[in-house]
Length: 256
Image (cartoon, rainbow, N blue to C red; front, top):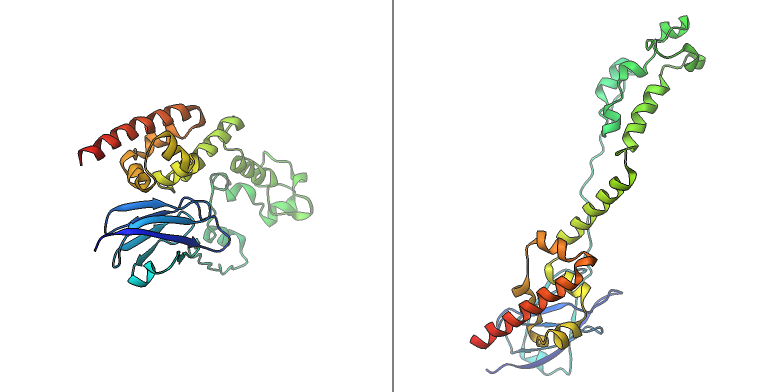
């Protein structure tokens, strides 16, 4: 049976439905939704559609004859819910003896690792005598018989929060790490749809609406190169890259 144009619309709760990928797995034909979630694709009964979007659970839909009787086929997607990893909380059983308990309690972080429990403690007998174990610290820093050297604790906490002598350099490093994670969490197609409009592919690159998903697969680049091209100062280079790829893609299509 010959395939004909199927008109459809993606429906979802309170989330944008533009630029979702509709791919006919059976015929290897793709389409992209517009701002209203509408799309059109050539298909026939028994074909399998694969619908994919960044904020949704992917869905497979097998077409039937009845779907072609409708003026517009409606397919509902479920919003993707990100679940956090399970966290297990295990209480510590403390003895009340500080020397024993500090050996059992594990602390995390570079700053805390630098706090020496032997230096921050004052033994009860030494406090009564007014002579702290840490002789570099005057006894009046442990008022009312306090058991802790607060200067030693403070030094460890400072090292925890001050990661780099150059705050600007550290800030740039954190930003770049977040950017890299964001790039790796999305596909090449999603990055392109976020950067360019549907008209850019159709009007500027002269790629047919139904060929856009396949073209983006053809133009996909390694994550290392993508990371560079997605920087704002490399936008012209990215456009030139897509332009060159579009020409090559159309030549490949002509050979088929």
